[in-house]
Amino acid sequence: MKTRNKIFKMMLLVLLLIGVSACGTRRGEVSFKNYESIVTVNEASGNTIASSYEDVILILGGGFVSSTYDSGSGVVVWEDAEGAIVTITFDQGKVTEKAQTGLYGSIYQTPIGEKEGTWEWVIRQLALFTFHASNLFGLLSSSYYWLGLLIMTLVIRTLGWPIYAKTNDMSIKMQLAQPELNKIQEKYRNRQDQASQQRMQMETMEIYKRYKINLFGCLMPLLQMPIFIAMYQVVQRFPLTPMNVFTDQDITMNTNFLWTTLGNTDWLPNLPLALLVAGLMFVSQWLTTLRTKNTQKHNTYQNAKAQQSQKTMKYFMYFMVIMMAYISIGNAGIAFYWIVGTAYQLFQSYVGHKNIGKRTEQLSSKV
Image (cartoon, rainbow, N blue to C red; front, side):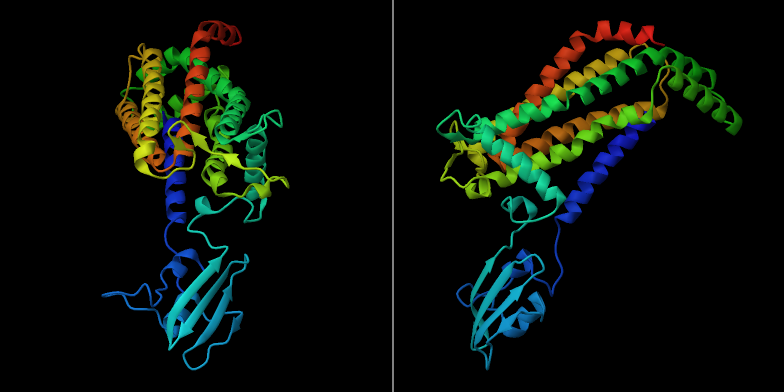
């Protein structure tokens, strides 16, 4: 239970870091948020006044690369370290025009190929595979984004199957070891002194060693997280990316899917897909919880921490369902990706549960 709580805490920490990284920016630098805060004369109305030259200097900083500004009029150009350019035109000390290239609200609004780095290279390779899969690697005369996304999701999930199998084996080992773990917990149930607690931990570790249960096995699902995060970025950014990033040929990607497009951000057309995401996710989480209860039904001893952990898992399940549905409403491509991925996960779970008896006998014989 302690290991599982640590995993939950790590996942929540990742979500927190993602949220923090998406928040805000500093004044005095070239950024999308700062650029958006500059008000032109045409945008000014009521309580909103046009930005002055001094305002813009405070917003973007004084490190511009060229300037013809003189006596209230002229053009000033800024460029950041990644090559994004902001051009501001002034007349009578006020901003009359603003233009930018290379600035994006967030990484999820940035076309693939606009940035450099190892992580961007990984994302580009996944997107390139998706691009070629969209026409079955040249077998089709047209390119369909939904087809490429379907194939890519199935390939990623299949490559991750060994990790799922190892995780399933770890659950079976925990089930086999549970009766002995229960005896130890019952043995030291009313002994709270330090020496007894240390002996309980030593005896517990001996059982873990005998059944080959280790922390790495419990953390194996986290190995899939980087590739899933990369795929999330690919799905968000692929529809924003011009096809010449992937090929020299003049190709148009068909993003249509049923009544919407995979990349649509309007909530109403995405609502049916979001509800399907929530339904599949709920079924997946519910089956996992049900099977966990079935494996623990012979666990006669549960301390307060274990009971609290079960409640936490239940609340976390509802949180995940609501969060995924909410995100899916905002992007049809993400909804489609999660529908395929969750359906495949249910298939994996079915296969694993179907063979659990045979696998239990195999692992039991090795103890």
